[in-house]
Length: 109
Image (tube, rainbow, N blue to C red):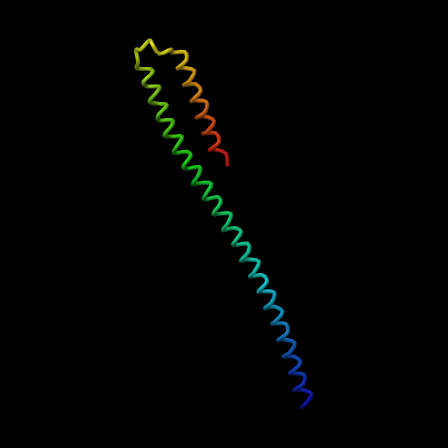
């Protein structure tokens, strides 16, 4: 009878020890998952900030493009020969190149 009780005690102690080991392993896994989650959330916040910056930059470029478009319309509609058309065309071409470069940069990930 004493032997049975002793065996039951040792069996329970072994099971308890195994449960404690599994608990510690699970706590470690939980800790790792929390760290991974935090890392992912930090990365997401950075990407959101990058996206917001890109959107602000795009709005600014669109605004500048609209200004350039207005300049083109003014130049096309003007009969003022005092304005050197070659110089004006060169400046407009310069703006267009800059706008194209900015649009290309916004398309890059």
